[in-house]
Image (cartoon, rainbow over all chains, first blue to last red; front, side, top):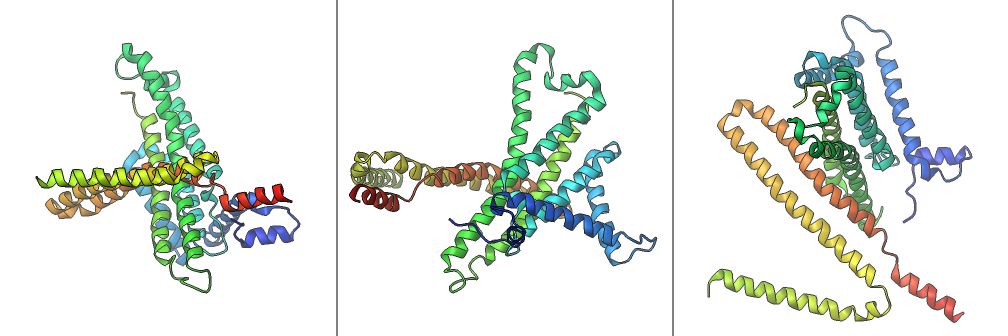
Length: 232
Length: 125
């Protein structure tokens, strides 16, 4: 299968880069980052007490996310809201730009999703050590002390399985959606035939993008809460 | 004979018949040493099929519970639906693991026709 054609890759090739397709997920993730930072700067430039359109939209978004998170974690969980909000917005925008013809989803590549899952994994343990110190190891030892030699490997494997499940869930959903879109478009005869064949998948793709961003954020919140609270 | 016996007998005949046809056609492939691609193709098809079967049953159970809960208490409908959507996403992720393995396997099957033509051309030329 030849490479699909992406606008950003064409721009990079015109600027002199060889094989831009191999790094298309990196280039598109930079694009998503620039998009998010620019929208934040533009809409929050003249922040006022009575909000205007752009500021209103972001207030609703960020306030809604924070309420959703504080419902689950309680007030002591507010300090990791920047990370959770970033994860949600970044994954949401990354998933959605893959639906636009001419753009690739950075999350359709296992590297992007694995890096985000590793960040969540690392932050889980940082929160645990920050809240409990050395006693954080009691989270891994199970309810009763003499079960510890059995529980410790199981808990360690469970924690490592979280990384795999977070990354492969997001990657599989978004890559599978892109693969189905590609195959349907190719089977429909390209521009000459049934070019409306991918349309139901595009609708499903919007739903899946939202749900996968929500699920990643929710699982991160639950892992953080699990390492903040007392051991079993 | 009861209906179950008839259905069981017909299923057994069907499975044996189809599998014997498949094995007969693949003597030639086996002789060429390309048996492994047959295995890969069959594994991909059956793997994702069985995974989707389990996922379908599990999702049906989840939606059943959500609908019954909403029917008993329509005011909690919003919260129940949110929890149901999250549960469905987690169940679906198990099917996605199988799908990723199938993708990995499917892209390992080469284009056998082109490969044969290439080999024959290089041998003949």
